Length: 332
Image (cartoon, rainbow, N blue to C red; front, side):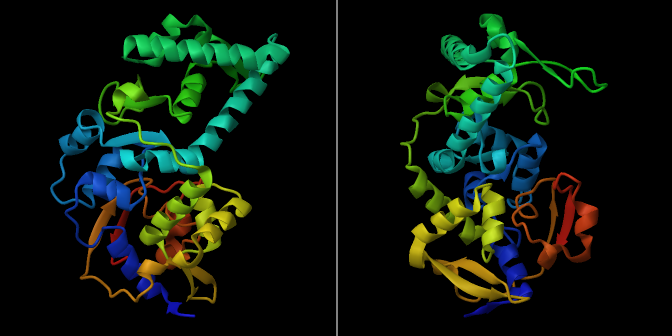
């Protein structure tokens, strides 16, 4: 079994994460990294800029809103990503369909505790259908506009009753998030500046030039792991499971489906690592490089086991929720 030590892993990080020299279009960067984290809207622009010298904000906005070659979607770990449109059906089948079902079940359960009772699911499905029809009629709209068209979207849920942090929240955002996770809606332009997290919603079949053909779940999961290993390998089984947000069983099944497209190697410390068979040869260190990465950049958020690239700094860089702030990198 070949050994891949931490020095080679850091060399791979610089090259495969496109930090040691770049020049690719922003779509290629997002594709190579299997998506850019988009929970913090500004991170998309900053993560792309860190890998594409001279990239302007307008270049990213053009890809998102004019050419529409990039799209925002919930995917791995129920996290918002920006990904190339051609990867949309892979992420949808591999991750987002399951997320949509989970979000729907949760909202039905919350509504079921109201006077709707056992009729909560039928009521919610009617509201979702009405919201989608209203959006189709408008072309694009904010949540506020859609709740004006479909007043049932304004229905309130009570959280933390009797507690200081409690309050009422309408179901608008949850309902529209379910429709988006089902692939019916996409997040369009933000309301305000590029740092805004409030978007106009658009019907997917209108926003995108052509909706990609759907993938089967098993095929999509295998493809997602294959692409991820090219960018983030070597990695452990736990790394793959954490990044995808799947169960251990689902992770093992996806790896098994890849067969000899994945090879095992030994990592520093004796753990077994996984590499794409097409990328199993030793990688030389690139020329010295430095990178300034934004909060939630895909590189530091890429692995569950982080000691090999963070060392003693991990506790100072990640918050209690497992999110990282801005970081400065030198040679991995």
